[in-house]
Length: 278
View 1 (cartoon, rainbow, N blue to C red):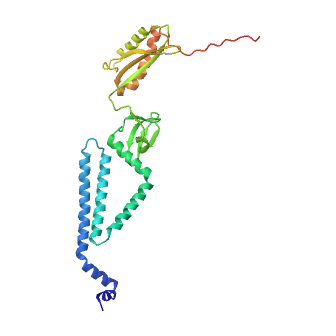
View 2 (cartoon, rainbow, N blue to C red; view 1 turned 180 degrees about the vertical axis):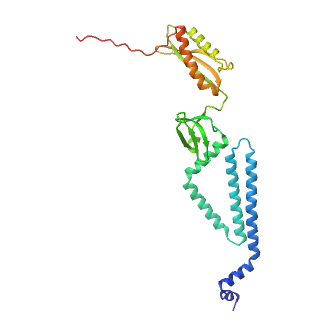
View 3 (cartoon, rainbow, N blue to C red; view 1 turned 30 degrees about the horizontal axis):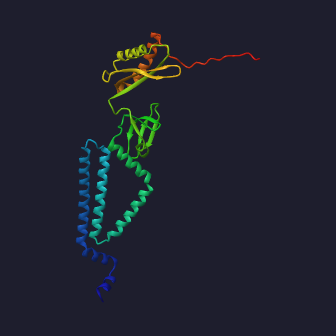
Protein backbone atom coordinates (compact mmCIF):
# COMPACT_ATOMS: atom_id res chain seq x y z
CA UNK A 1 0.00 0.00 0.00
CA UNK A 2 1.45 3.36 -0.98
CA UNK A 3 1.24 6.58 1.04
CA UNK A 4 -1.73 7.95 -0.92
CA UNK A 5 -3.72 4.79 -0.27
CA UNK A 6 -2.86 4.95 3.42
CA UNK A 7 -4.15 8.53 3.62
CA UNK A 8 -7.37 7.65 1.83
CA UNK A 9 -7.99 4.84 4.32
CA UNK A 10 -7.96 7.28 7.24
CA UNK A 11 -11.04 9.01 8.62
CA UNK A 12 -11.73 12.69 7.99
CA UNK A 13 -10.66 13.56 11.52
CA UNK A 14 -7.40 11.66 11.14
CA UNK A 15 -6.73 13.31 7.79
CA UNK A 16 -7.40 16.74 9.27
CA UNK A 17 -5.04 15.94 12.15
CA UNK A 18 -2.27 14.90 9.77
CA UNK A 19 -2.78 18.00 7.63
CA UNK A 20 -2.78 20.22 10.68
CA UNK A 21 0.40 18.63 12.02
CA UNK A 22 2.16 18.96 8.68
CA UNK A 23 1.12 22.58 8.13
CA UNK A 24 1.11 23.82 11.73
CA UNK A 25 4.01 26.21 11.25
CA UNK A 26 2.48 27.64 8.08
CA UNK A 27 -0.83 28.15 9.87
CA UNK A 28 0.84 29.87 12.83
CA UNK A 29 2.87 32.03 10.45
CA UNK A 30 -0.22 32.94 8.44
CA UNK A 31 -2.23 33.89 11.55
CA UNK A 32 0.68 35.92 12.90
CA UNK A 33 1.06 37.64 9.55
CA UNK A 34 -2.66 38.40 9.45
CA UNK A 35 -2.75 39.86 12.97
CA UNK A 36 0.43 41.88 12.53
CA UNK A 37 -0.69 43.09 9.10
CA UNK A 38 -4.08 44.29 10.36
CA UNK A 39 -2.47 46.03 13.32
CA UNK A 40 0.08 47.67 11.03
CA UNK A 41 -2.68 48.76 8.63
CA UNK A 42 -4.57 50.41 11.49
CA UNK A 43 -1.41 52.10 12.74
CA UNK A 44 -0.53 53.44 9.29
CA UNK A 45 -4.12 54.59 8.72
CA UNK A 46 -4.17 56.54 11.99
CA UNK A 47 -0.81 58.08 11.15
CA UNK A 48 -2.01 59.16 7.73
CA UNK A 49 -5.19 60.62 9.25
CA UNK A 50 -3.23 62.67 11.81
CA UNK A 51 -0.76 63.89 9.20
CA UNK A 52 -3.48 64.94 6.75
CA UNK A 53 -5.58 66.58 9.46
CA UNK A 54 -2.70 68.94 10.24
CA UNK A 55 -2.73 70.21 6.63
CA UNK A 56 -4.44 73.61 6.46
CA UNK A 57 -5.97 73.17 3.00
CA UNK A 58 -7.34 69.67 3.61
CA UNK A 59 -10.76 69.14 5.16
CA UNK A 60 -11.17 66.65 8.01
CA UNK A 61 -13.65 64.60 5.97
CA UNK A 62 -11.17 64.24 3.13
CA UNK A 63 -8.40 63.27 5.56
CA UNK A 64 -10.58 60.55 7.09
CA UNK A 65 -11.60 59.28 3.63
CA UNK A 66 -8.00 59.03 2.43
CA UNK A 67 -6.95 57.33 5.66
CA UNK A 68 -9.74 54.76 5.23
CA UNK A 69 -8.68 54.08 1.64
CA UNK A 70 -5.12 53.48 2.80
CA UNK A 71 -6.35 51.07 5.48
CA UNK A 72 -8.51 49.07 3.07
CA UNK A 73 -5.68 48.89 0.52
CA UNK A 74 -3.35 47.50 3.20
CA UNK A 75 -6.01 44.97 4.20
CA UNK A 76 -6.11 43.66 0.64
CA UNK A 77 -2.31 43.39 0.57
CA UNK A 78 -2.28 41.51 3.88
CA UNK A 79 -5.05 39.13 2.74
CA UNK A 80 -3.27 38.32 -0.52
CA UNK A 81 0.01 37.75 1.36
CA UNK A 82 -1.67 35.38 3.85
CA UNK A 83 -3.30 33.39 1.06
CA UNK A 84 0.08 33.11 -0.64
CA UNK A 85 1.51 31.81 2.63
CA UNK A 86 -0.94 28.87 2.45
CA UNK A 87 -0.04 28.17 -1.17
CA UNK A 88 -3.23 29.57 -2.67
CA UNK A 89 -2.90 30.84 -6.25
CA UNK A 90 -3.75 34.53 -5.89
CA UNK A 91 -3.53 35.53 -9.55
CA UNK A 92 -7.07 34.40 -10.30
CA UNK A 93 -8.35 35.98 -7.08
CA UNK A 94 -6.81 39.35 -7.96
CA UNK A 95 -8.29 39.14 -11.46
CA UNK A 96 -11.71 38.32 -10.00
CA UNK A 97 -11.47 41.24 -7.56
CA UNK A 98 -10.54 43.52 -10.45
CA UNK A 99 -13.59 42.38 -12.39
CA UNK A 100 -15.87 42.90 -9.40
CA UNK A 101 -14.40 46.36 -8.81
CA UNK A 102 -14.98 47.28 -12.45
CA UNK A 103 -18.59 46.05 -12.35
CA UNK A 104 -19.29 47.93 -9.12
CA UNK A 105 -17.67 51.05 -10.54
CA UNK A 106 -19.86 50.96 -13.65
CA UNK A 107 -22.99 50.32 -11.59
CA UNK A 108 -22.20 53.17 -9.21
CA UNK A 109 -20.85 55.57 -11.80
CA UNK A 110 -23.14 58.42 -10.77
CA UNK A 111 -22.54 57.84 -7.07
CA UNK A 112 -18.76 57.68 -7.51
CA UNK A 113 -18.94 60.86 -9.56
CA UNK A 114 -20.68 62.59 -6.65
CA UNK A 115 -18.00 61.28 -4.28
CA UNK A 116 -15.21 62.56 -6.54
CA UNK A 117 -16.93 65.95 -6.80
CA UNK A 118 -17.43 66.02 -3.03
CA UNK A 119 -13.72 65.39 -2.49
CA UNK A 120 -12.86 68.19 -4.93
CA UNK A 121 -15.22 70.56 -3.12
CA UNK A 122 -13.69 69.69 0.24
CA UNK A 123 -10.15 70.09 -1.10
CA UNK A 124 -10.58 73.19 -3.28
CA UNK A 125 -13.06 74.85 -0.88
CA UNK A 126 -15.02 77.08 -3.31
CA UNK A 127 -17.40 77.63 -0.39
CA UNK A 128 -17.66 76.82 3.30
CA UNK A 129 -20.51 76.12 5.69
CA UNK A 130 -22.35 79.36 6.46
CA UNK A 131 -21.44 81.13 3.19
CA UNK A 132 -24.08 82.26 0.69
CA UNK A 133 -23.59 80.97 -2.85
CA UNK A 134 -25.39 81.03 -6.19
CA UNK A 135 -25.33 77.96 -8.46
CA UNK A 136 -27.50 77.95 -11.55
CA UNK A 137 -30.93 79.17 -10.51
CA UNK A 138 -30.38 78.48 -6.80
CA UNK A 139 -29.15 81.08 -4.30
CA UNK A 140 -28.79 79.72 -0.78
CA UNK A 141 -26.63 79.42 2.33
CA UNK A 142 -24.48 76.30 2.71
CA UNK A 143 -25.62 74.17 5.66
CA UNK A 144 -23.55 70.98 5.30
CA UNK A 145 -21.02 69.57 2.83
CA UNK A 146 -21.02 65.78 2.40
CA UNK A 147 -19.27 63.35 0.10
CA UNK A 148 -22.44 62.68 -1.90
CA UNK A 149 -24.58 65.81 -1.54
CA UNK A 150 -24.46 69.38 -0.23
CA UNK A 151 -27.30 70.74 1.89
CA UNK A 152 -28.44 74.31 1.23
CA UNK A 153 -30.98 76.70 2.78
CA UNK A 154 -32.66 79.28 0.56
CA UNK A 155 -33.48 82.81 1.82
CA UNK A 156 -37.17 81.84 2.07
CA UNK A 157 -36.26 78.96 4.41
CA UNK A 158 -36.64 76.13 1.89
CA UNK A 159 -34.28 73.16 2.13
CA UNK A 160 -32.28 72.16 -0.96
CA UNK A 161 -30.14 69.03 -1.31
CA UNK A 162 -27.92 69.20 -4.40
CA UNK A 163 -25.76 66.33 -5.72
CA UNK A 164 -22.09 67.26 -5.59
CA UNK A 165 -21.57 66.35 -9.24
CA UNK A 166 -24.20 68.85 -10.37
CA UNK A 167 -22.84 71.45 -7.97
CA UNK A 168 -19.20 71.06 -9.02
CA UNK A 169 -19.87 71.19 -12.78
CA UNK A 170 -21.46 74.65 -12.68
CA UNK A 171 -20.02 78.13 -12.07
CA UNK A 172 -20.20 78.89 -8.34
CA UNK A 173 -20.70 82.47 -7.12
CA UNK A 174 -19.62 82.95 -3.51
CA UNK A 175 -21.11 86.08 -1.95
CA UNK A 176 -19.03 85.89 1.25
CA UNK A 177 -15.56 84.88 0.10
CA UNK A 178 -14.16 88.45 -0.11
CA UNK A 179 -14.40 90.85 2.86
CA UNK A 180 -15.77 93.81 0.88
CA UNK A 181 -18.28 94.18 -1.96
CA UNK A 182 -19.40 96.88 -4.38
CA UNK A 183 -22.98 98.10 -4.49
CA UNK A 184 -24.32 99.96 -7.51
CA UNK A 185 -27.51 102.02 -7.53
CA UNK A 186 -28.99 103.53 -10.72
CA UNK A 187 -31.77 106.11 -10.45
CA UNK A 188 -33.53 107.63 -13.45
CA UNK A 189 -34.12 111.40 -13.53
CA UNK A 190 -35.96 113.61 -16.02
CA UNK A 191 -34.17 115.13 -18.99
CA UNK A 192 -35.00 118.58 -17.65
CA UNK A 193 -33.28 117.96 -14.29
CA UNK A 194 -29.64 118.75 -13.48
CA UNK A 195 -27.35 115.73 -13.82
CA UNK A 196 -24.68 117.44 -11.72
CA UNK A 197 -27.12 118.08 -8.90
CA UNK A 198 -28.32 114.47 -9.03
CA UNK A 199 -24.72 113.19 -8.78
CA UNK A 200 -24.04 115.54 -5.83
CA UNK A 201 -27.16 114.38 -4.00
CA UNK A 202 -26.20 110.71 -4.41
CA UNK A 203 -22.65 111.35 -3.16
CA UNK A 204 -24.08 113.21 -0.17
CA UNK A 205 -26.19 110.18 0.68
CA UNK A 206 -23.12 107.96 0.53
CA UNK A 207 -21.11 110.33 2.74
CA UNK A 208 -23.72 110.26 5.51
CA UNK A 209 -23.77 106.44 5.83
CA UNK A 210 -20.96 105.05 7.99
CA UNK A 211 -21.14 101.65 6.27
CA UNK A 212 -19.81 103.14 3.03
CA UNK A 213 -16.03 102.72 2.81
CA UNK A 214 -13.76 105.66 1.96
CA UNK A 215 -11.38 103.43 -0.01
CA UNK A 216 -12.37 102.80 -2.74
CA UNK A 217 -14.14 106.16 -2.75
CA UNK A 218 -17.82 106.47 -3.77
CA UNK A 219 -18.41 107.34 -7.42
CA UNK A 220 -21.42 108.99 -9.09
CA UNK A 221 -21.79 109.02 -12.88
CA UNK A 222 -24.22 109.19 -15.80
CA UNK A 223 -25.10 105.57 -16.44
CA UNK A 224 -27.45 105.67 -19.42
CA UNK A 225 -29.67 107.80 -21.64
CA UNK A 226 -33.03 106.10 -21.71
CA UNK A 227 -36.21 106.89 -23.65
CA UNK A 228 -37.77 108.97 -20.87
CA UNK A 229 -35.02 109.33 -18.25
CA UNK A 230 -31.32 109.80 -17.63
CA UNK A 231 -29.80 107.06 -15.50
CA UNK A 232 -27.58 108.37 -12.70
CA UNK A 233 -25.41 105.70 -11.08
CA UNK A 234 -23.81 105.49 -7.65
CA UNK A 235 -21.07 102.97 -6.83
CA UNK A 236 -19.97 102.41 -3.26
CA UNK A 237 -17.93 99.75 -1.46
CA UNK A 238 -18.88 98.22 1.89
CA UNK A 239 -18.16 95.25 4.09
CA UNK A 240 -19.82 92.08 2.86
CA UNK A 241 -21.84 91.77 6.06
CA UNK A 242 -23.31 95.28 5.48
CA UNK A 243 -24.21 94.80 1.82
CA UNK A 244 -27.90 93.91 2.08
CA UNK A 245 -28.80 96.51 4.69
CA UNK A 246 -26.84 99.23 2.91
CA UNK A 247 -28.53 98.49 -0.44
CA UNK A 248 -31.95 98.94 1.13
CA UNK A 249 -30.96 102.11 2.97
CA UNK A 250 -29.34 103.84 -0.03
CA UNK A 251 -32.28 103.04 -2.32
CA UNK A 252 -34.77 104.52 0.13
CA UNK A 253 -32.57 107.52 0.87
CA UNK A 254 -32.11 108.29 -2.84
CA UNK A 255 -35.87 108.51 -3.40
CA UNK A 256 -36.36 110.74 -0.35
CA UNK A 257 -33.38 112.95 -1.25
CA UNK A 258 -34.54 113.51 -4.83
CA UNK A 259 -38.06 114.36 -3.63
CA UNK A 260 -36.66 116.99 -1.25
CA UNK A 261 -34.40 118.45 -3.95
CA UNK A 262 -37.21 118.59 -6.53
CA UNK A 263 -35.54 116.09 -8.85
CA UNK A 264 -38.14 114.06 -10.70
CA UNK A 265 -37.95 110.32 -11.15
CA UNK A 266 -39.90 109.55 -14.36
CA UNK A 267 -42.17 106.58 -14.58
CA UNK A 268 -44.02 105.14 -17.60
CA UNK A 269 -47.20 107.02 -18.47
CA UNK A 270 -49.77 106.43 -21.19
CA UNK A 271 -52.08 109.02 -22.75
CA UNK A 272 -55.36 107.82 -24.24
CA UNK A 273 -57.12 110.05 -26.78
CA UNK A 274 -60.79 109.37 -27.46
CA UNK A 275 -62.29 110.46 -30.77
CA UNK A 276 -65.98 110.59 -31.44
CA UNK A 277 -67.35 108.27 -34.09
CA UNK A 278 -67.93 109.79 -37.54
